[in-house]
Length: 107
Image 1 (tube, rainbow, N blue to C red):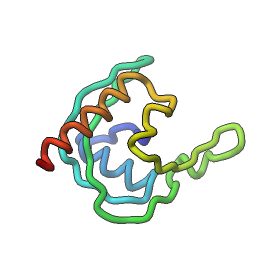
Image 2 (spheres, rainbow, N blue to C red; image 1 turned 90 degrees about the vertical axis):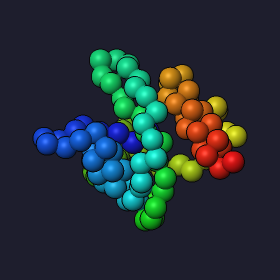
Image 3 (cartoon, helix red, strand yellow; image 1 turned 30 degrees about the horizontal axis):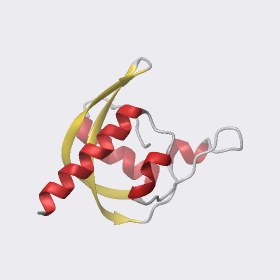
Image 4 (spheres, rainbow, N blue to C red; image 1 turned 90 degrees about the horizontal axis):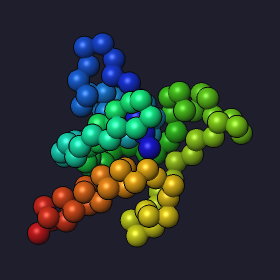
């Protein structure tokens, strides 16, 4: 899952947009704030986002540090396969919340 640290004088939302651009080479629009996940001494702020433009390519520190013992790879998965990924249960709940929100807005 993409993520990062907030820089000086940067909002959480600005950080999210910057980190997604750096790590995945895409532009997004934030739809909504979904919640907070606390784990192992840090806090994740989870947002529901919409893809706007760009081609998915690994970038930033993940690309620079990518090696056989510290491997990063972008995967597109079908939504029906999301429960097969080794995700933290709280992160999976946030993904489900985002999908419910999107389904509600499409009606």
